[in-house]
Image (tube, one colour):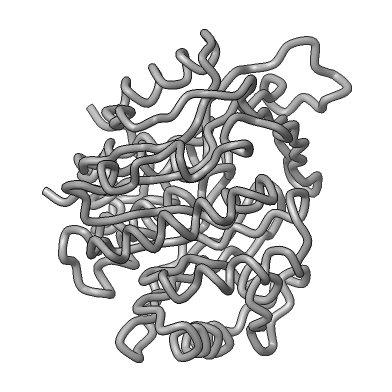
Length: 340
């Protein structure tokens, strides 16, 4: 069986119950999460072998988080320890015309202060077929981009397939900082996941005739963006999530995979959102599941879109769908009828 290694931050998510605003909250729900960790958990739930690598403080809060990963079958044997804190972010869930809000408290976290010496990449990648990271990880500090570059170099040297979700976060770094770093990483990346905003703000590549604030999507524009990325950086696959936000509660969701000079579009889903955080990570996991299991391009993008559709009906960040559940949705069973 193929094995994926994910590298990134692992942090606490705190949010008020239900749809309460921060001002109304007198308690917070606790969840452990991180973009790459979410991908690892999702793939593990689908029966794949995964290992998550990060750096955490040696305290009971971090230990509880690691226990959550182990609960879902994710390997944790290469986690480094040091530093004093896990990062935290707060989520206020939006509804209808009120958008969700995120507040970060992740400066000086253990992973943000990591160095290349914290990780034995040759040992970490032994027996692995895939390496995954996101654009969030190098945004965490001024020094961690070099760690990411060294990890990609070793992964490429050892023959791993490298995937990356651009995942631009304006609260972590500027567009100029993101572009300067990610363009150095792009030549190592085989599979790139992005949305229309990521491609424009991080790589300076804009989808033609598209305005996400007006809900206007142009498929040919995304094909052009993916083609430019492949030609510029030698990327083998570019996957683009196509979210049309009708409101904070209802989205149209589909995706495109560009590979071999051809675009492949998934079917479109109307999703009534329960929790959209982690939706992109579940899409990436579905995409990698298809690639790692030798699916064709159309089958891969259909599986990825369906996996992400299901996740957005679940509370918190992890996609707890099994491969069989995703395949049922791909096959057309999206009625939501009670299963007895």
